[in-house]
Image (tube, rainbow, N blue to C red; front, side):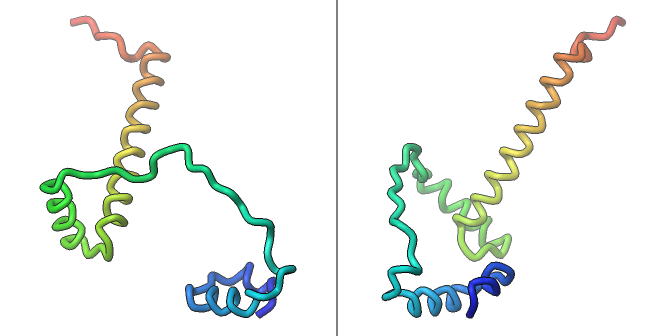
Length: 102
């Protein structure tokens, strides 16, 4: 498979594996190694009862993995919070946050 065709087509995991295996011994096909030093924590623990409730709801929503469902829920909530914050900020800056006279 040419490199040009791999850029325009979304590859499956199996296709990626085939390409990697085919180029495994070709040093020219590889870039220099990248070193990653994560500075932020990327995971967190949930209390057991909350994790069980989340797992139940993930199954109810036909999610394949509870992690995927939680990521979606958190992303949606963050977007809602950001929108609410931006709206409040605009209202305060525009003066529409003042009380109306009775």
